[in-house]
Image (cartoon, rainbow, N blue to C red):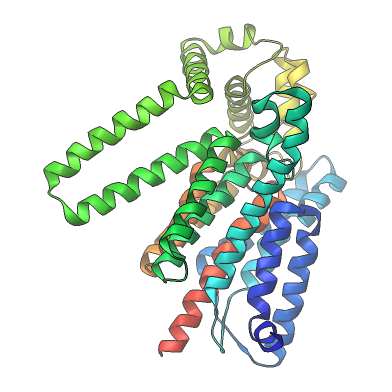
Amino acid sequence: MKQFVVRYALELLLCLVFICLFNVPKFAPVSLALTIVWILVAAIRKQLVFKPNYPAAGFVLLYGAYALGIVWTKDAELSRFYLENKLSFVIIPILFGFSKKSGFNFSIVLKGLILSILLAFFWGIAKGIPCYLHYQSFPWCFMKSHLSSTIHPTYMAAGAQMAIVSVFLLLKKKELNKKMAMSIITLLVVYTFLLMSLSGVLFFLLLSATYILFKIAQRKSRRFVVSMVIVLLAFFSGLFLFTPFLKKDIYEAEQNIQLFFSSQEEFVHHFPETPSSSQVRLVLWLASIEEIQEHPLGVGTGNVDYYLGGNLKEKGLNELATHNYNPHNQFLHTWLEIGVAGFFILISILVAGIRWGIKKKNIMAVILLANLTFNCLFESMLQQQSGIIFYPLLLMIIHIYVESEKKAHD
């Protein structure tokens, strides 16, 4: 046991980071700090070979853009807090850009990621039981943020989806039997739907459809593939139409989008006192675009709330302004905060990361960056520690695995 812990200390520490990140987020920086201490000691002992990951290095440039944004900020104290919060953009790409001479056991980390998500799911269920006994309401006790109280449901759904990918990789490595793998996948799929993150559900469906079609294309004729596309589209359409909460969300979103594009003034004028999530997003996107048009070079690090709130107040949406919502779109958020340069750095990270994954033939890296890209359309995914740590860290873990495997075969 002692030899196992010593040999795979890095992998076990990375498991601890994921467990903390998804279950006790306040301890995630501490667990990450412990991992960094191990890396520094291993580097001194020359157990590591450092090689940069150029797509991940884009996060360092992104951090530089945030640091530059302090120059024209209206709140120096808040901007410093933002920079401290995003330090992982610098630390992770630089310190985790290495291969491990003794080999890297990727499977341990994959199991740690799966375990961390399952722990969060079971803890959410455990907390929901007394709630249900008191309120007799399944949606109130076992869905959305009630099921994921530690982090936002969209971040948890992203973790669950990468855990599903991890199960498939372990199955391919024959480190999980089919019955166990299917049981875990079923739990993770159920968790994804109960979290009720619309972007999370949509990405899962797109990922599932892509996987099924890929498998079909490997074995069947083109005509059969086209037929299956039609069947899958019909299936997913039926799922949206007859699953109550999805049907309601889709219907509300459709109605709001139609009204928004027919007349934005009318949309704002008839904005309800208790708006739906789609109504909030649309008005936030509108306000963000208007502010970007006025400030193409950005409003400064930490100033998004100030300018976005001012725009909403000008529209008479005082109640909405008090919530200090972010734009709920990382692309708009980045451009509004640090300008067009920051926006293009973000796009470059995503494109270069996906290209790197394809070049290295690593499907997990491709799915990870595709997941981030898709979720950035609906949430400001790189504004909370759950996203700031998770995406760069998992990308660099994949880098360590790829480079360590390469060293082993050289």
